[in-house]
Length: 157
Image 1 (cartoon, rainbow, N blue to C red):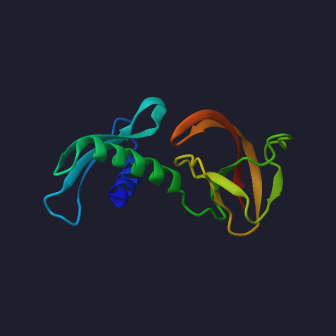
Image 2 (cartoon, rainbow, N blue to C red):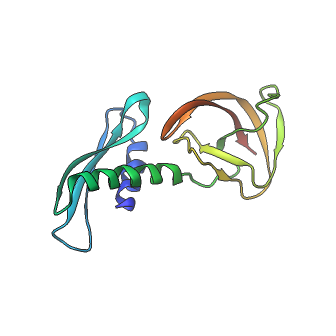
Image 3 (cartoon, rainbow, N blue to C red):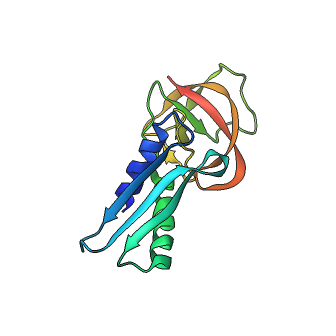
């Protein structure tokens, strides 16, 4: 089911329409068991999931499973970053450099978004050291909600 959810989120992100809805049906190893759901942009423009129907599942169980899998997928979807990408980090927040300043970003620096996609709550580490051009500060919540956090935006060189 996680793969269906991941594909739906990626398809939703690729749509320029903020009212887009992506539906999917998952059938498990037992053909009589299935669940249908939809992924859409909910409050605050964050992706959300809604149960639509199921067969041979306890509804309370499958709704909880959908929400759990959805949150796990949201926290794990983060493409690799490399030269030419724009990323969000939590670096230099105490002393922001002037916009346009080129800084060193060490191997293992955590980043939370690549090229305007979802903001990951857990982040991912850079694979290698990069030079980055500071573009400014950005404030938002991560994909699964929570408090507004500050991020620094860099173009990787």
